[in-house]
Structures are given as structure tokens and as C-alpha cells.
Length: 230
Image (cartoon, rainbow, N blue to C red):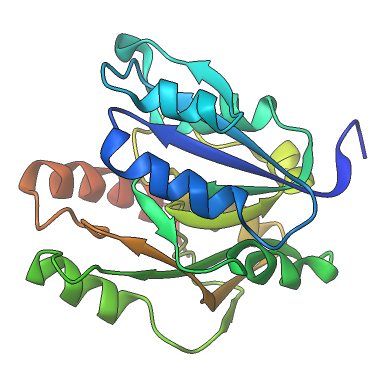
């Protein structure tokens, strides 16, 4: 196991000034119906109560100065600090919908061929209409086993620690590291499972109410990912 504790789930959360959502997120995480959980918060120089809230829940804290932040390196640093066999990744502004969230993400790892799983994301009642549309159309209600489709989303996901040891997140890109990783791990013969019953609420959704600057950054990275697809 290379120092990893069998069946433990380590939850890695990236944050930046998330005091509005973090308490609800962590309350849901620590109250999961799962016997062995640890939580690592990778914080990007928050100036609000984010770190204080995380400390109150017993999280391990890693700080990355703003000028050094990269989405991929933040995850790699967080995972490096974990001791679990499985790594759950959830955004600090996402809130698991019930106490079975982790168990439902984890239940597919009985097969060594499964490298990762990810779950459904739901809007809140006051989410922007564009975000509601995008979440409802992107995350359906049917379970999928993906062998070629590299869509994968780290706002609500779980990966096998040994798979990350084989392939860490690409620190040469800034964002969309989940799909880049998924494409490469699938090419190694693994599969990824979409589990619709592992649900989180995600207020701003995956496209941030059609934020054009974010969309342009995402498109640049996806174009790079697709260059060598066959």
C-alpha cells in the first residue's frame, strides 16, 4: 500500500475565500456515513475565515501563496499530504447532498480497472438560469462506465491513490486538469465511472454563469487536450 491506509478516504478541498460555503461543505463531509475519513484543505492565501473554519473541523491545512497557485499543483500537493487509499476531491463551494456521498463514489473501486469516479452536480434554487441549464444537461441520471469518453469533473470526484501515483495532475496547464488526467488514464486501460447518486449542490455550476474569461481559459486547455486525440 506504500503507506496508504486501506479503505481510508482522504478528502482534498481547494479553497480561496470560501467562508460563505465552507462550513456547510465540511459539515456534510465530516458527517458522512463512512468509517475512516481525513480532510486536507489546500488554501490559496484566503483573507476571510476560510482557514479558521477548516481548523475548527480538524482539517490538515496546506497554504499556497497566490502568486504560486495552479489548480493542478494544488491538487498534487494536497494528495501528497494524504494517507488514504482513495482520494475524494470536492470544491469548497460544493455541498454533498446526503451522508452517502462518499460511499457511493467509493463503491465502484472493487474492480482494479476503475481508476476514478465522479458524481452528479445539482444547482440550488437561486443559481443563475444558465448554471441550472448546464448542470441539468451535463449531469444526467444514468450511471456510465467510461472507457473512451474523458469527461471528468473534480468538483465532485474520487480517484484511486495508486492511479494518481502512476499519473499525477498536469502542472503545465491551468484548469481542466480533470479531463486531461482522465484522457491519459483511460489510455492506460483504466475506466472511469459516473455515479449519479453521489450528488453535490454546486451554486455557480461548471461554467460560472457563462463567464467569458473563464470560458476562454477552459477552451484553450481543451484545445490542447484534443490535439493528440485519435
